[in-house]
Image (tube, one colour):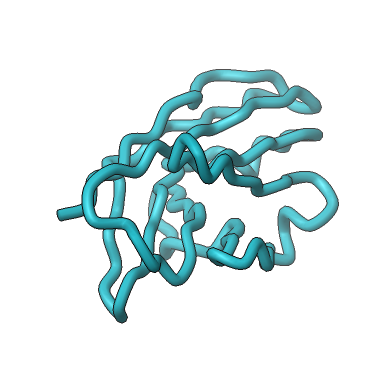
Length: 115
């Protein structure tokens, strides 16, 4: 019913920037929020940032002031602009959409930050 396709991951040096994109398709009308989560090896998946259908944003403490989430309603796409990247930002980044109390996930995109 809902498909999420992430793109934009890659390898970057510390201090660099990347922008992730998540294109949503299918039954996404009246979604509650979309966002990004990440999971590093051996760690639990954690919140990075979310944005509601009303454009209210929320960020994880470790990325506040460095990452910015935004969305293009016409393209059904959510973006994550990441700046001042640190090696500890290395993880697989997953896009998530919540709609009617159900969560949908993308396949994930790898972000690797070298020292």
